Amino acid sequence: MRSAGSDRPVISRPPTRPERLATLQPFHRPPVIDDGPPAPIPPAETPDPEEPRPPSSPAWTPLISGVVVGSIVATVTGHALIVLFGATAFVAAVLAWGSMVLVHRRRSRLWRNEMRRRRHRRASHHVATLEWLAERERRRHPSAESLVAMIGRGDPYMWSRRPADDDRSIWDVEVRRRDVDHQVDDHLHTCRDVPETVSLGPGMI
Figure (cartoon, helix red, strand yellow):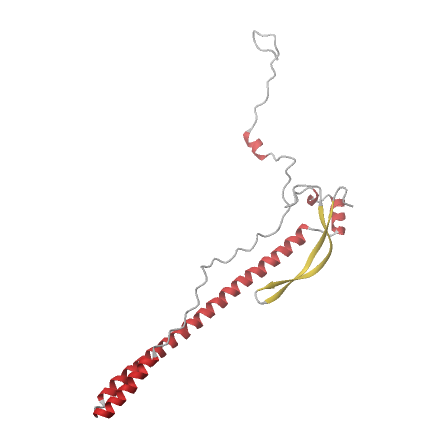
């Protein structure tokens, strides 16, 4: 069509709908392949408590010396009350030290139980993470037979963007599965059927 008072043709374009633009997906950014459930969340913990320190023993030498000197003085002077003062101080020191030892043993037992619970929580999270990683590898890397079947039926996996491959035309194909041992705390944990892979791509065969 021509505009009024002008010989130049003017092409009218239909208005662009913003809602349509919002739903458009760039062709070169295909969806990421489904990696399954998210990684396990580590347990929220405070810093490890310090191990309780054992109580310091009382100064036994002055206490025993007081009892001995009091006994000698009481024998010479005939006043038994003097040795009673030394013996009382000695007994009081022994009782106070014994009570501190009992308190320390109780605190140490509670500390050991808390550290055992913390190690168990950390080991459980470590095992869950290892199993999650193994399952993710099983999802990411099909076997050669599965890859051929995917190509035959046009599976979306073939154009899905695989994580950590920089969108290259390379597939990590499973060649076999094996059991893998991992050290978890003070024991071994075995992940079953972990795929071993080989990279396939242009110029790599």
